[in-house]
Image 1: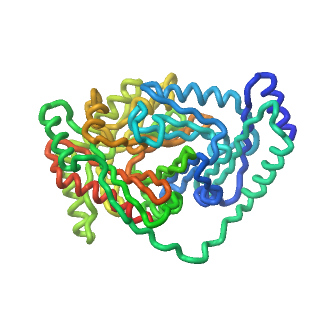
Image 2: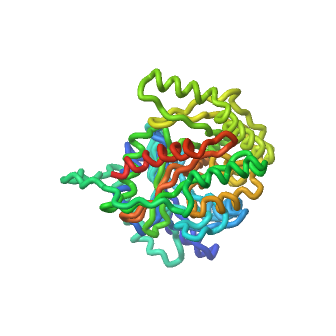
Length: 455
């Protein structure tokens, strides 16, 4: 109670709200199960996990939120979040990287509003409740706005109740009856032109020398026999594709953006950064021998190696503009998933002291793996060729902690779900030598992953 009274005195002295951030180390807890238990369609939420790494983070209910647009949408967020941190008072078990308030963010592919998009170009929020787990460490954090008029006794009661709940979280019993399977009743490809026709147009621009690579996406609308609960869908995806990041985000308008991605955009720990080039794909084989043959063909494919090199070189150039001397693995390896394998090169570097995570994010997004190269006029051409709003597809989402540690991923292989209506997205990189039919098959493979997990 004395801590909350101190926060209120500061709010009165400064003339603006203060945020009381209370961190609690807890026993084993599942961030996704917690989020499922408190999920509300009209409340903001965020979830990001890479099951293979044993780390997950969830947040719900925005106590502070701001939207951003335009070319400065990333660096504007830096100033805004720093101002909130200056008005945040932390208490509790603060000796661990999982403790303290985290800002969650999700940014669309384009930096200006799109007609038909469910999300603004940039959203950053501080959650009321956040839960994180890594290895054997688990933390619950409450972030509470305190003003002159805040009823402190009621707030203290809620904090104590949450403290007790998170120490021994009471997960709900399994539902008695098995839910009926979800059936796709209608499927519609968004746009007037076929995907193959769009690929042909992209190839013409590449032959003309305007671009070396263009990434095109497909959007398909599905009407389902019953509602698709977004976090159940997410759970099925994460269980099957444990080598990928799984995610779900919402601004509380009834829509959730759910998906999985094999692609890390940026990870920052101290002054060290990690990113990666992920481009060039092949199917998996039915047998060990066929799988090895397909992997070998991918590693020797001139078309795929060229596409991969374009992505890696572009990332290194962009980091160099911020003074980062990035190192790239000498030759690409493989990232192997249950249904597809990709060429992968890890990229690392040291961050100059005058550069921030948000500046790095602005330099890297969008990577050539989801946009293309060169960047000049790229966004206009993609919008013209696709003729559907990407929204958060091929955008980026992630979190940043109070000490500057941060992580963001590229939001691909995803869908927008609202009740019984779902829009699914998948894309393919087009370079010289691409064949429209094969590129469509690649997107079909990616879309099938999402469809199979719906129910």
